[in-house]
Image (tube, rainbow, N blue to C red; front, top):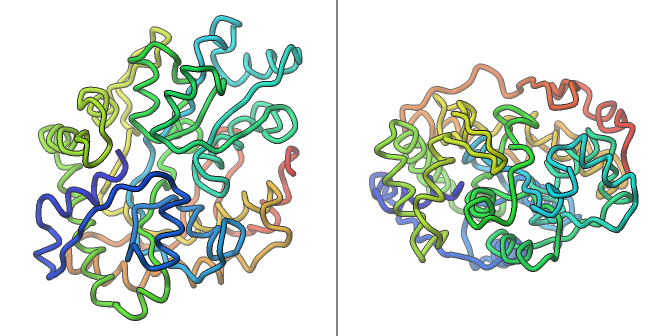
Length: 361
């Protein structure tokens, strides 16, 4: 459902206001999105933050210079575990660690792309509970829409993915929400608007117009319950997410049920605007993904974290687009957060941060 601002920019014709036409195309997997971006079949995409940097750094497929034009949203993903784990007493990170320590069998967890956000949330959360995501469990890559079906037939014990595939597992009575990603990192960056640097350099006005239209769409979605319901109804259709609208709308509105009997209203549910904070491509956000790529051995050496983030994240284009869309611009290109393990990330010493974790590759 985090494709919503791209979809609504087209459906509500915010794109036409800026003189362009966004034609959304549904793809089968993140690997397909990557390949079509790199070879020019797609001009831009709603895409995993870490996928863009994986391509930029040559660790997630073909190496090519990439750009992040904006962040599309914050929060709103989750880690789902199977009902079989619940039956064994594992309902959170601590109880999962105890179960895995017994070594009764191998446990398998799925993410959506090796350098992507879901992989990084999953690894971070497991490691925060003393579970090595590469030694203590098996981890596999599964496209988001296939997660529920794969868990139903027992191919994995848990997965990290965006909505609605976490809530879908609860509705289908095959799993429960062990944690939301906003509980791992409040207001974490999620999907981005990505394009090749070649496309952006050739079409700077288009890139700016596209960014402005999607900023407007994010603001429209976040401006009330009625708009969120309309968005859920549209993105639930076969052309987009292809699942029931009521499965989507609950978590879009922040009405959470974890499948274990707990319900709550989450003020940190998926945000598409948040007064511009949810759309700004913070340099520190980009650097965090690179620190985790280094932590897990995807990067052999430390890159120049800040220089790379400045090259990829086109804050210049974002600021022009935000000004055109009448959106406020944050005072700083960096921000600070405390994650689930109590460790603070502020982007000040990325090399030291990447090397600081007890559990690493």
